[in-house]
Image (cartoon, rainbow, N blue to C red; front, side, top):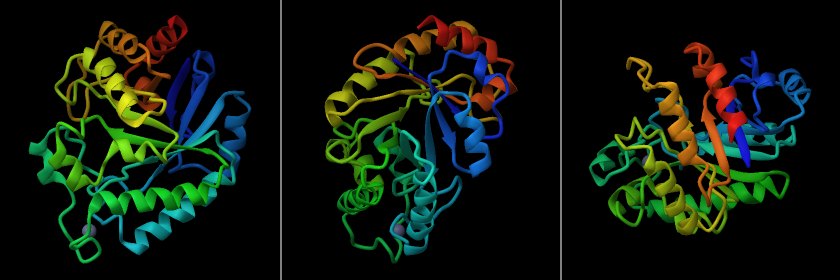
Length: 264
Ligand SMILES: [Zn+2]
């Protein structure tokens, strides 16, 4: 069972007291010194890399964006993480909607992607990433928790085809922030099962532990977090990933997260 926490590399207070056996380390503040500190924890370590940054309305086919990503990828791979997790990898990194009505949030056509089939372009890019990883780490992908067979329009504009991506990517982490998505806890296990079948690869759901976005009052209780965790670990899930330690520290929920990870 993977018990994972998404962490900032310099915000690790109390992490050693949890029963986590896996960390997903945000690459933003990561340097070799903090990686060495992380290694002392004796946990499985992986690295999360943004393809597009938050709020960045750029095209994934923009050569400048691709060069930046491949530089970051190479830096990450030199640290030998168990997995590299690619985040915000779609046409419209900020779109996290799950229905066809959210298609308007996707990236608007630009000179780089004009007239191109977005799904095919992303597949080509994923193949290139896989070649560059060259077996040095596993290839993980953070994904939006929508069903691309039901919301085909959204899949098309974002360029996401989970069945085909599953032929290349090694492991998926759908962002099952169910309260943000307006769904009940049961959606976490239901969706995890659906995606595991769709992509034929291991699925590690990542769940929220506070109400998001930040300007929302946090009404998520210990019982709510427990219910989400129990849904997340139901088969065929690989385990659970907690988003993120910063929220646990901010909302005084480190003890709750520790207790829950110890109980599963
Ligand atoms: Zn474009």
